[in-house]
Length: 114
Image 1 (cartoon, rainbow, N blue to C red):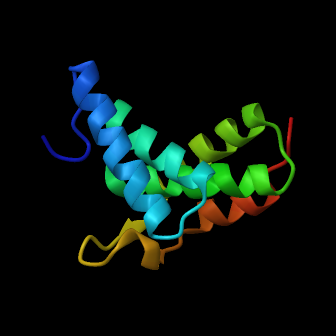
Image 2 (spheres, rainbow, N blue to C red):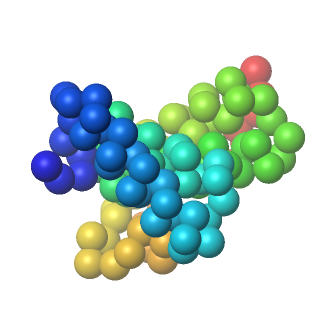
């Protein structure tokens, strides 16, 4: 089963989560990033670029002292904007973050906690 496909078996979800979490920590990612990246891949329908963006923005919000509720909302919104308004080149690794920015995403800079 590939990335982006929903896993039905709880044991398979746990195995995928554990493998990806450990890989990300080994690669030097924070535990926050690794947890959310692995969770998005193992438990959601999202593609890898979305999962990477979600984890990155969740981690960023937490590091800036925001609540987990805010971080979740910020990560969802940001990852959705990337998915809809950016071009992701699948020929490179997500860590390189090669995106073509649209004007709509620039508005995310003014995103404020509600």
